[in-house]
Figure 1 (spheres, rainbow, N blue to C red):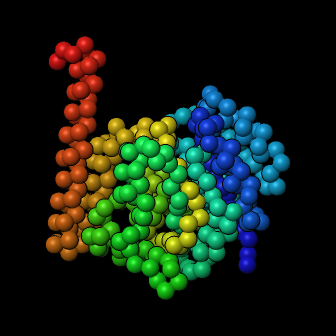
Figure 2: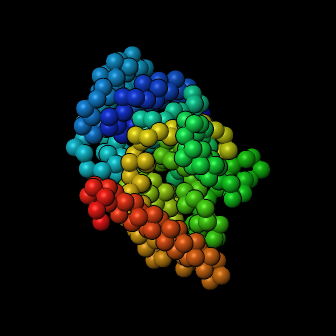
Length: 299
């Protein structure tokens, strides 16, 4: 087996709470040819001291680059910009990799031609007392639930899958969060950077871009852990869901939905409009409620 250089990319911002666990999971990889690229968005907690202390004895190179905050997409792009590897393995500061994660995903991505992205299942780490977390896990624990596996237990996605309504029904992200994926840098460069105008949906929008040109493979093995907690970016950016929705919906209408039979496209439209209506009403109500209380109970 060849061992092409893999860049583990960690975009950080005030990640001291869980960062030591993430870094340790990088050090424990059984893959032989790694570098670690950390792009920090002006952290003012103990993020930088933790990085300096824990990476001093790593057996592979570590690059720490400082980045002027301009949104999470800009920080992701900065990680890629400073990477030297053939492959990019994202890991978020809250998340973890199993020791064989990189080696197994490299094997998967090199198993077929034209594969831009290899991904894995993930374990979800969360506070089980928090009912909101329980609800999220019940909906999104199995992102590939509606997809078919091949005889070796892998999911294969290509642009033809945009033709089917099931690809859009349920969670839009059928592939996984960035900590679950390994990306071919050559193919990344061919489709451009992550969008910086999206706050939550920039990962799967990018996966869609890759899938429109290349193959995506997903193993049924669980090789990463995704952490839910109150301070993560996903929770902080929930208020931007309408903004992101309008952008994603315009992409679905302009680029993807026309590929489906009319009957299926109707299903997708009904589902999307229902979701938007429900979300918009709850957000407007929330803003009015917040304004009401900030005015001392005066409307």
